[in-house]
Length: 67
Image (cartoon, rainbow, N blue to C red):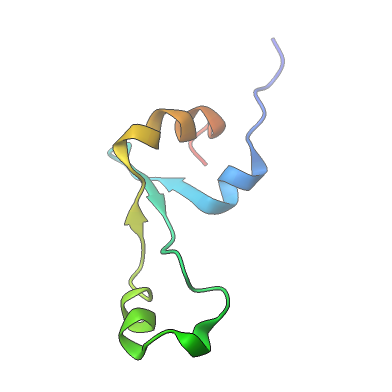
């Protein structure tokens, strides 16, 4: 049986925790930062958020080895 392939785009965006939750980075930090308030930028600096429960199974299929 051949090795399963990890989706590289998903690998860069998500990571799995030890309990099986899917961690994601906070959105809105890439561009147009001059238009955002200081508070918006400060709050998006927090480490990460968790992916929605409804999307978890789909994301886990893209990360077969838990990268």
